[in-house]
Image (cartoon, rainbow, N blue to C red; front, side, top):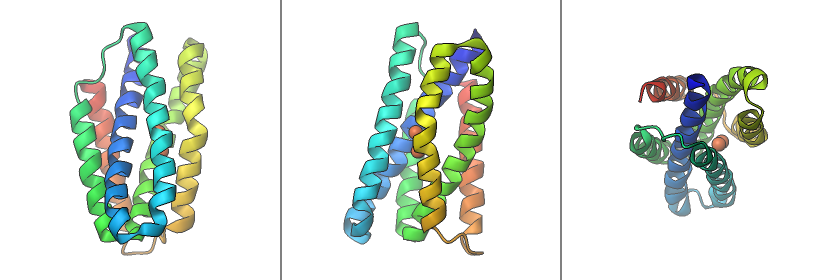
Length: 169
Ligand SMILES: [Fe+2]
Ligand SMILES: [Fe+2]
């Protein structure tokens, strides 16, 4: 079914974007926010696992990946660099914003896949716990004060746009 292929493809691309974000933040954090290195490394390892899960699913089913994959990687990386340079709080607000948007999507995907595809449902479900933990960490550590609300808003719009675009590419 086309819709299922699209879901797997978008999630796969999104994980590539997440790898970009955390890799870039990690790069900056090694210099500016050393205490965040361990936690960023941990989140990056989760995203690599998630990416692997969807890569395997694409391969097994002979589905092509999203043509926008390099865009996700680059966009994520740029976003990661900018937020990390803005400071530790921007890192956490960015994480919270991305994961909030992602979890919103996972919710309808899971409801849809539950009815149509047990294997894809299991794959999406397997990443949900980690994304919730990332969101929680972002909320706990990031002060979503008035200065940071535009960052939350902007990152949310960017994530939504990237997800929309990926359904077309
Ligand atoms: Fe992920
Ligand atoms: Fe995540």
